[in-house]
Length: 107
Image (tube, rainbow, N blue to C red):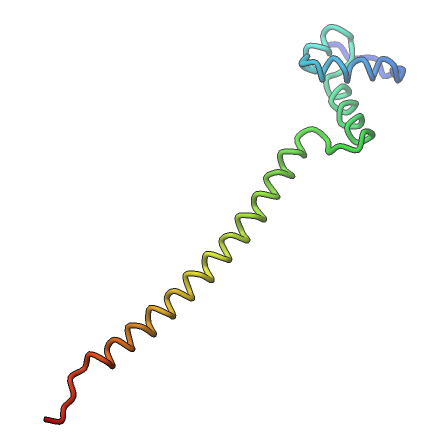
């Protein structure tokens, strides 16, 4: 594949590529059509997201996964604590039951 030119593209062109990609066009498709590298297009998309105050593409999923991981770890700690409390209570009640059900040795 011939090397693409290294001249900077005007901001309007970059914005058009970002909009086309947002509309569903693949960077590889745009690369063939507009003689610009797909890597450049992906970089422009990433930068446009950052400029808009949004996480770059792909980071949203990681952020959501991170939130879910935190939630699941918190839930896991709570469930472990509940299990430990139940185990302690079960042992206590079992001990009490043995004490009250033991027949007395004095006849």
